[in-house]
Every structure is written in structure tokens, then in C-alpha cells.
Image 1 (cartoon, protein in one colour):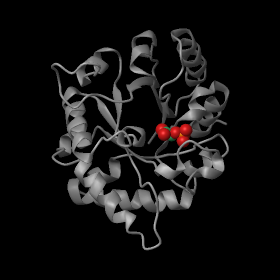
Image 2 (tube, rainbow, N blue to C red):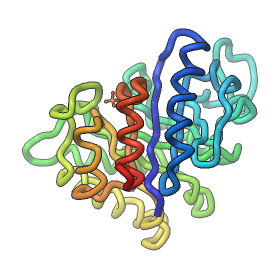
Image 3 (cartoon, rainbow, N blue to C red):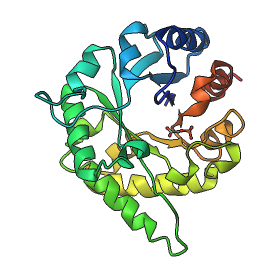
Length: 251
Ligand code: PGA
């Protein structure tokens, strides 16, 4: 299966001009790669300015949990889709920290899937404890976030295991590839209980949290990650393009 690389631009860059330039640089590299799928998730206001390519598509970073109505300042699943997004990040820890509960995440996940968006569901623990109690919480999180998602809909899921403590640092702040693999297998088991083994095996599990050109190959190799979600390093085209080439196997 093709590796998936997601760029989460968060609330960057500041101007449409910068967004176009960054995207153009990534696209130039993407056009030469054949073995990866790239999803760039800019702020929603930039979506309609960017022209996706064959292996480079667009995603949003969040949607509101109702399909329509009087919700000042919010963006609906359909609006983000018509603005050009085929994917949507849901449940990012930076949104959960603002008070987003699993119940809201679940509403958004189901709404996005019904709207025809592929869901990039982010989840991870804020801290690990010696007795591994956090694993129970992680399982509960995944179960609640995917509650009442049908098997047909589950085909459009991408899961990102992203330990919150690993986000936003240098290569050494990241999880280890071995630990990622262990947690990805754990999440697969939870998925298998809900959707059956075959379907669970087909749902990609990506690693996120301080991915850099220095550690990307290890997560994809030793860690057997189906792909990567890249935050701050996706804002530096030269560094992000190295990650893309590594994931493509052409670096
Ligand atoms: P980071 O961000 O790569 O800067 O750690 C990842 C994310 O939070 O999406």
C-alpha cells in the first residue's frame, strides 16, 4: 500500500501568497513521486486557492459537529468539501484541549463520513504511566470516537496515533518506532473488535508527533507505519520534501 503523508499546517501561514508558494514547492516534488499519497491540510480559508494534483490532495483541519444552522464562526462538513477538501482531520489534540469531547469527535466523524470525506482521526495519550493504565483510556477513546460508524464507512478512515507529549518538538521529542508499532498493533486490535479483522487490517495507522526528516524513515521502516502526519516540519518545504521522498522510497 502507498504510504500516506499528511501535512497539518495548523494556523499557518499568514498570507494567501505564502500558502500558494509553500504549496507550489511541495507540488513540484509531489509531481515526481509515484508511491505515496499526500494530503495537505491548510487553514480552511486557503483551500480554494490551492489546486490539488494526482497524488497531492487537500484536507481540512476541523469541521463543526452539526451539518447546518445558526452556528456563527463554524464551518460545515459540506462547506469544507465544496471548498476542495477530500479529507478532514478530526480529534486533533489541539482541539481536544479546547474542550472537544469524544462525543463531539464522534459526531464530527460520522458527519464527515456521511458527507463523503475521508476522516483522519487523531488520538493519543497525554502521558504514559508505568502500569500502562493509559492504554485502557486509549482504547476507550477510539471506541467512543468511532461509535456507530458502519463497516462501509470505516473504509474511509485513517487513524493517526499521536501521543500528545510528542507533539511540537525536535526528532528526539518523538515516540520511538518500536513503541509506535506496539501501539499501532494495540489500536488494530481495538478496530478488529469493532469492524472485524480484515477491515481493521486495511485501516491505515499513521504516526504523528515531531516527525522530521531525521526520524521519518525509522517510523516507516522499523515502526511499519502506514504513513506520517507532519506538523511544523510541513511548513518548511525543503524539509517536508525530504520526508516525502523518504516515504516514496526515492530519497
Ligand atoms: P508536530 O505536529 O509535527 O509539529 O509535532 C504534529 C501535529 O500536531 O499535528
